[in-house]
Amino acid sequence: MTLSIWLTVVSICLLGAMSPGPSLALVLKHTLNGGRQQGMITGIFHGLGVGIYAVLSVVGLAAVIHNLPNVFIAIQWGGALFLAWLGFQGLRKKATIINPQITVNNASNAARDGFLMACLNPKAAIFFIALFSQIVGPETPLIAKFIYAFTAMIIDMGWYVTVAWLFSRPKWLSGLQRYSHWLERIFGIILIALAAKIIVSA
Image (cartoon, rainbow, N blue to C red; front, top):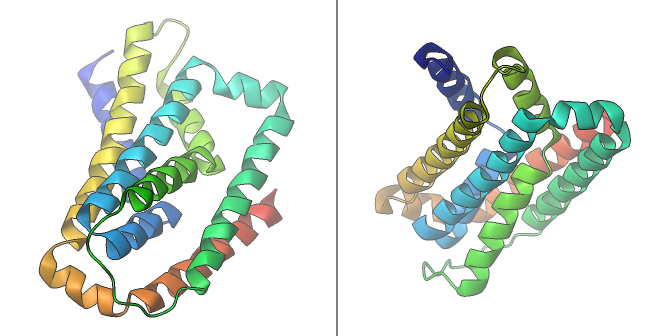
């Protein structure tokens, strides 16, 4: 493993994490509803899910998908249904006074949603297979493979934790929370549209 290859992984993973999508909408949703801690929990568990995909990719996920295409199709459908479920939850959101105190149940929901969003996202598999197929070969040491995967996980966690921290600042959060039910509905429409796109492509 060379520094240049590692920096390539860093830059590509950072661009992938920063691209707008359902994961960003989910982190913002939990940040608006539960505050900084809940948003950060979502980001941390999303990163764990991404880390699992990254590890599986460097140790042979491409071969599994090639030999067992039904597995990948199942992941696609599972991801689409999860996105649609989150979307319909957002569309049903009503205007309420948000209590900034975070309950254990809300934290567990944030952890669950963040983890499942990453694990049921078929684009994550495609992304890491495309990335690691360019830099990982038979001669790549196992420790280097895990460093690449760990790097992807930390970058994903770091980005979404940063997003949660920025949008939970009191001046921003108080203003956003006044319109949180409308934002939830907008996020809901986006998530349902993404789910429909996945189903069509599948």
